[in-house]
Length: 231
Image 1 (cartoon, rainbow, N blue to C red):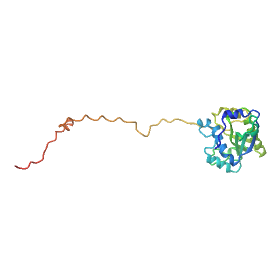
Image 2: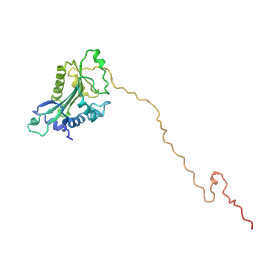
Image 3: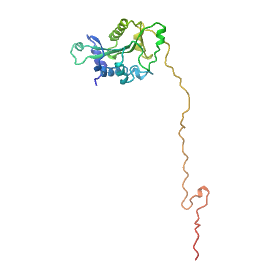
Image 4: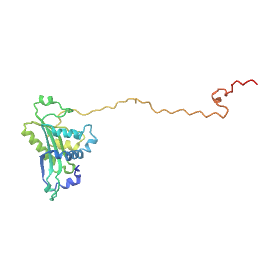
């Protein structure tokens, strides 16, 4: 399994490097999956919904689906720090669909139909933490928007966690706005446990002295009542 480049390695690799985009191939699936886990590792610790496919099985299913674009953004091998490298470095991954995909999606197609919107749904837009701020994200978004124009789409639609401040700042600076007021809400319910609390056991009474068994409880001492044989 290929390792995802560290943040420091990816950051140093951008000096004078070129980023190229291509469609994902089956041989890339394992590398991209590891890349996504690395990118969303910290975000997923504090969000209700996973910000990436929840399982590798689902990720493989997406690869087989029709109408889904999966794009890989890599630093070209020959331009990494001016030295040749054995393998190109993944710095971004974009996934978009021309219709709502997945049986567990909460998207409502009627919402867009009633507003005469033909959206391109951006399912993933992941940038390696080590190359943020050098133009990779802008290039990725420009590529996705280019696809949308070619296919006659009128909007880019995506979901972003409200606690992902960097992503919100990025999208708002590029004219994205909030579509709906829906947010996750929760209320703590004060209830009782179904199990009773621990209970302290009674102390065992002290044992009676020898020959006086049972006297402590008010019962007479035991008496031999066996009938004696006549002399």
